[in-house]
Image 1 (cartoon, rainbow, N blue to C red):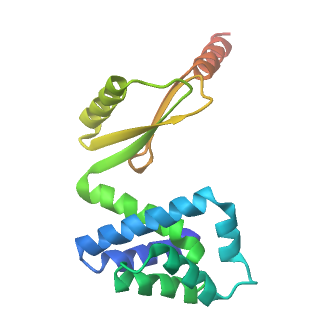
Image 2 (tube, rainbow, N blue to C red; image 1 turned 90 degrees about the vertical axis):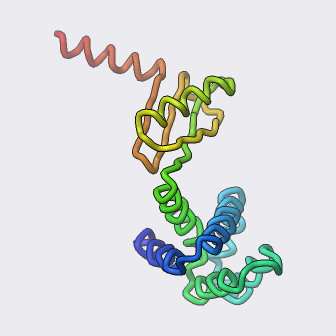
Length: 178
């Protein structure tokens, strides 16, 4: 349900047909989403019935500063009036996905317990770009995976090379053989 509602707000942003404004929306909503992810207290305060909707909106607008386009300000106010400020991360994700589709340029993530070199990351980007016909950029995230996992969610790509996966496949193969 939340995704459907977020989709309608994202559609309203794209209906402006103003690429500069859409980019500004994307940047602001991405920054707000990052703040929401990094601080649980922000999400709790947005969902708190103790704070008025006006105070919630004012807090977000104060954080954005005064140089924000009036349409962005009005958008945040509408989200606040409809008690949907918590949808900002979902709206941001939809906007990013649509922008990536339009530019045929996608972002992915490399999960690994060891740091990869720039040349290895570049080679992975080139290989994925060649196979998908899209421009792929990857960022690395340290993980406890023994191996490597590459994920480009918007293209539905997930490649996983791990010791555990090889073990599981070997066990499955042995079980099927007997």
